[in-house]
Image (cartoon, rainbow, N blue to C red; front, side):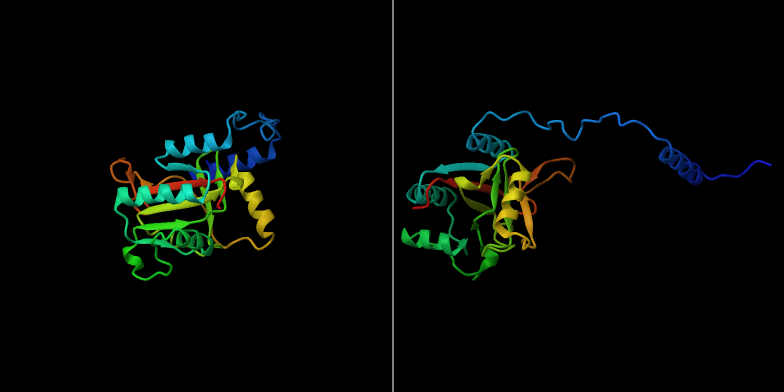
Length: 214
């Protein structure tokens, strides 16, 4: 009498048989192999190239004065009026040069720009690592149409693993509850495979790398 075996049972039998058979690893050195080519570029150059490739904007500033001059140009170009900044360190810098901004979330639904700090800049793919540990929390990097990130040169690393090591060194076991990587402006291609920027987040991302905050 022929045994009536379902296709599901046949599949499970094949899996069990495969698990019982010992086979040599066809890629014994895979974990030790290098995933990327050795980088010979300066991290600033590599990050700028990768960020621009994903429609981000990179601006290098030597100091705080240089930063203010550049952000004034952007504010004039885009006609920004509702600029929000909740980081005390950045608020002090902006206030020193009498740059107008909102210190609270008053009329936040009308926000045009959010200025935040970050945890790290990842040169390999032009990503920005942020967390909710800063005063900007979870909202300021997501809701406004334009996101401005301020970073120091010491926060620039090559790979994602280096950024996570920075987090571990900084916070120890108290890692922030929200850690996220921002790779360019928000985008989607869900509708007819057409790429749309800013569909569910900022339409523009500006990364200011400042050598000296003074």
